[in-house]
Image (cartoon, rainbow, N blue to C red):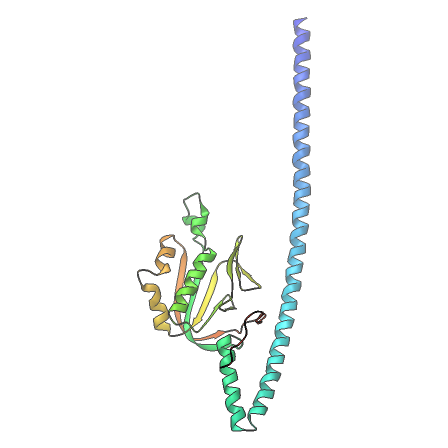
Length: 242
């Protein structure tokens, strides 16, 4: 009798254990299949959307360049008619340069910011070892205070109203830019003065290096900074006529 009870008990335990294993297996299989398929499909959709948006942006950039070329040609033709018109055209070009509406070239510096190498991270909190939006903003501010006349991040022109904010694993730059490290910052100005500003004791450079972030800076004789691409509109401010 005891032998029969033991067999029944053993059989019951096997049935329960088998039932639990089947449930666990089915649960894992469903989550892997559904989650995996959904993730792959979503990634493919996002990648295709990104390609389409990049192609659209490239076409619009070409249209902008063509229109700018036509405008410049009209202005040069108009300026050639009189000395007064030529002076007005020169002032207009300077104003556009100050407003960031034309591409600029000149000497300056190039800074590359990158996360700390993974093989050197020994702490649990990785947030201390990645480039944050505040780090990029501090570098931009130091360049501005040192006399930088034009600045770009990964090819995006930086203006007074350009935002630099966190976007998860990326950083939002301007209205449309969204970049992952490394961040290439180019600035036109006196190369010696711009580079020397990061040697000061209060410079953000020392903080970034202390955390092990990659910070490379080099002087360059010729840089090309693109024009600002975006809406320029004053909705509330108006000029004061003197």
